[in-house]
Image 1 (cartoon, rainbow, N blue to C red):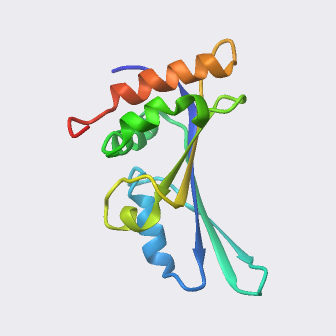
Image 2 (cartoon, rainbow, N blue to C red; image 1 turned 90 degrees about the horizontal axis):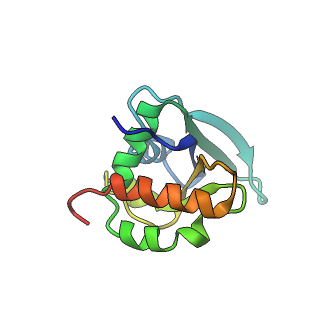
Length: 146
């Protein structure tokens, strides 16, 4: 089995007062392995409304492969791969924004609502090295749909 050149993958979303927390949790779970723990932090918004921050961090190779396999279903994965210079920062973190509504339906799409941050292994720790590692990794997890 191929090595996963990531330190971890974090997913985070917000559940606003107008949303059903169970549905938002289900959207986040679309990307996670079954036994992944989801952290829940309750906050208050600017207007006094309740905002719940739901987040999960996976660190084992199998857990990260699960997330990557789900990303392999992304319709525009080739576009993401082409944009890696802009999606990987100088700290070697890869960022994606995923559609929360689509995720609730079990679909994987770029959009708003869920933020994915993956710390890419790079030795030496340079953006260019991280971009190449991310490019190879995402291409390897691309599904046949793309």
